Length: 129
Image (cartoon, rainbow, N blue to C red; front, top):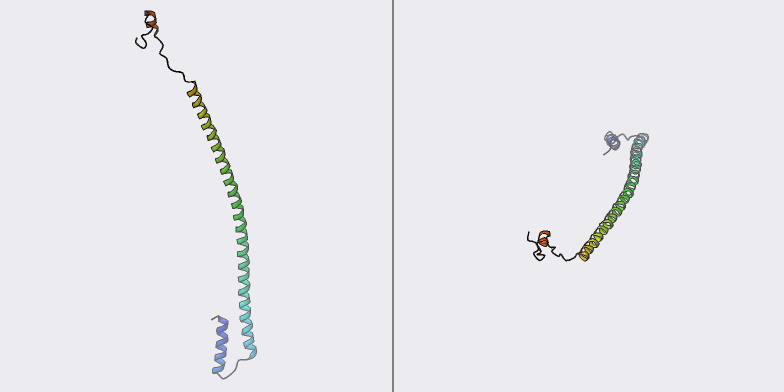
């Protein structure tokens, strides 16, 4: 029970016990004080609510900005990944072309006669020296 309500109750019960009724002005004065106290509390509550609302709006704006920044970063990262993938694909294609070129231009290995054997007249004695 609030302090003002307690005072009103005490005044009413005390007056009844003393068989003296409190004056209407006293009761009205206490009611006005109680109403004023509640109004002041409500005003403080409203002010705190408005401050909280402003803080939440500011936080929301910051989160929207952060979200936009993150979207930009993701887009940049995706673009970089695609560029890397394209570069790696070009490298792989070039390696494939080089391997095909090497495979297509490879000639059968034919043993050449050594110079010493040729001088000796034995051109069929390959590889022995």
